[in-house]
Length: 129
Image (cartoon, rainbow, N blue to C red; front, side):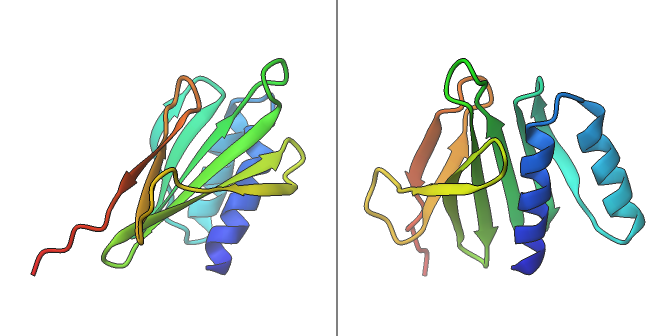
């Protein structure tokens, strides 16, 4: 859990950076010290989704200053059922508030649209016996 927090904090600072190569440099450095982070998806300079390990992903969307000047982060952990939490930060990486699912669910699953930043919640409570 500490690893996810550390990576989220670093990603927030990278998301607000004007340089596109900063994220790739961070990932290179992280892999050199034994980390295993994979970029699953990127969209311009405002969105990326990373695979931290087999059971954890992080999505980050940076809303431009003319629109809202916030950073939206969705962390999804699977063990084995997947569940997400979404949080809003300011551009300095300070935590502002959580985003609650729009549905009543034990295991809510969230994803960010890379183009608009809209967070979509789905119900992940289906159990098969």
